[in-house]
Image (tube, rainbow, N blue to C red; front, side, top):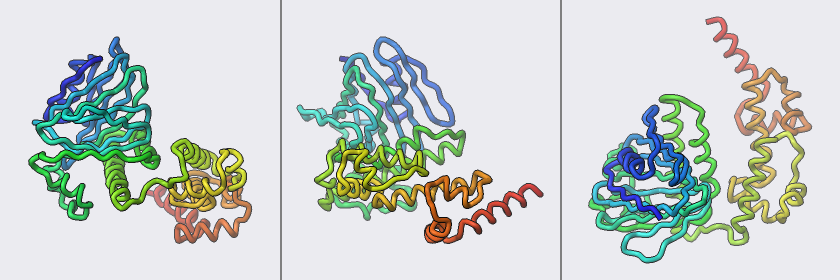
Length: 346
């Protein structure tokens, strides 16, 4: 077991303190710091990016060869921690507790300690662990002009306005697969400079809102559909990803049910929970998004696009395209051609 003592006053300082224990090299690019290491302790990357208004993002993508224990002293730097596990697990407790809470894959947490208690986080050896941690420094965040914490539920409101760091709060959410899409959007952002930072910032705020919304839902006793197991939700998420990757294939509720081994009722329940749409509505939504992309990026005519995305009726496609986007496919394509022609003449 390896213990790492962290008493940094910022996320960037925390990276430097971790480097002292883990070795490796820290690189900085566009304000994003990355610690890379590959030695007898373990291998992987730890990244951090500080944004405006007291918000920062840290991501672990690591494998350690011994249990790693992070002991965070909160006397200098005590933000609210919003965490999400994409792979593996970690364990957490406060220094006045004996028992750890295990945070598993696709689960999220909201945790903050009082300044006189420590966070103790254990990453188990031999496990590939990927998780991110959004940190909110309350004094800075509350200066943001459009922030109105009075709209938060009572428990979170008390956490946000606790500027003396006297309260302890820990919320451990059930499985939350929707967050993974936004986490992947951050991780796979193939952008540079300001564009990259703005993209990450947008996704971070989206994740924060989802953390808060999930806590609100639980406070209002809106819990996961009781008939769906964690493994079943994962299966439904994979079906959704398959449809995104191949929208032109022939899908039906009956076929997806046979493929997944899940009943049609469970599929409908799962799609509504994960994607806020029935199976049919989700397939139609993905196909229309794919059609719009093809109109933007290819020279295919509308009939070819209809065939490519799996529809059989051009008139039906035109009807639902206009219902969704407020314009016919023909007029949409005409606007694109007109814009391209104008730009070529400039």
